[in-house]
Amino acid sequence: MFQRTLIRQVQAARSVLATSSSTSAPLALRRATRLQQQLPAAIRPFAPQPMSRFYSTEKEASKETEGENAEQDPVQKELEETKKEVIDLKDKYLRSVAEFRNLQERTKRDMEGARNFAIQRFAKDLLESIDNFDRALLAVPKDQLEAAETEENKALLDLVAGLKMTENILMNTLQKHGLERFDPGEKVDGKAQKFDPNLHEATFMAKADGMENGDVMYAQTKGFRLNGRVLRAAKVGVVKND
Image (cartoon, rainbow, N blue to C red; front, side, top):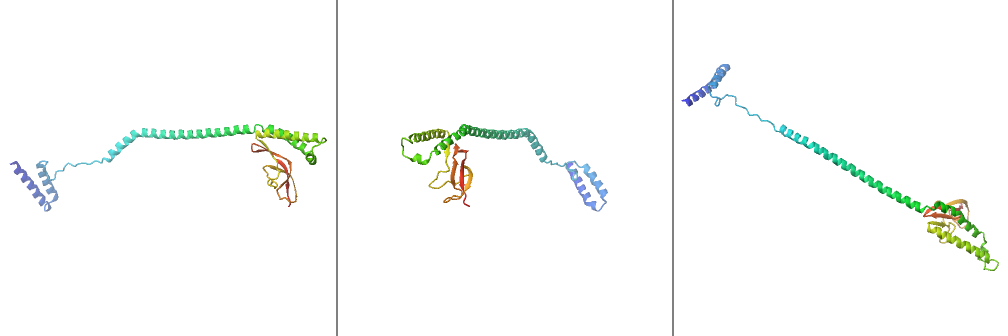
């Protein structure tokens, strides 16, 4: 009985809708509304159905990500600060090592320089004495030195030999400590030495037959080197034919 009643009400509602085009819209709408109200809510054809709402999960995911980032930010920040600190400490360490090595090299050079040139002032004071040996030997005429030994020149020859011996001993002793003497007046392979401003000091310039410009034609004083460093330049005369 109840089912028949429902079927009749549904058919009546459909007929109302079919005839709504010929009747006025407000009247048909009111009748349909009344019929609809008489039907159960579950089978009302025009009953507003509950609508499902769909929510985006992106905001929730972003909120969760932000929360995780907020939790990770202090750790990440501390890690970055630690990395920067490690880089800074490494840079300071490398700089300290480099400065220490430079200090070692400078100290080593200073010690070598002090050891090699400790007698520089003392050697300079001896140069004049060494020059006096040369002046004394040059004071004796060459023909007397080359003459045969006799009773008359025996004392002179012995004196010259003693001066040469003393000079050689002195130069050998100084040479052990790095002091060397060089003579620009000596020829090398039969040729005169060329003027070198690093080793020689030109006191005069003159023409000379059979010699080229820049040749050393006369050595006024000999030069000295101390461990490779020029202690005193040799004073020379230089050829200038132009």
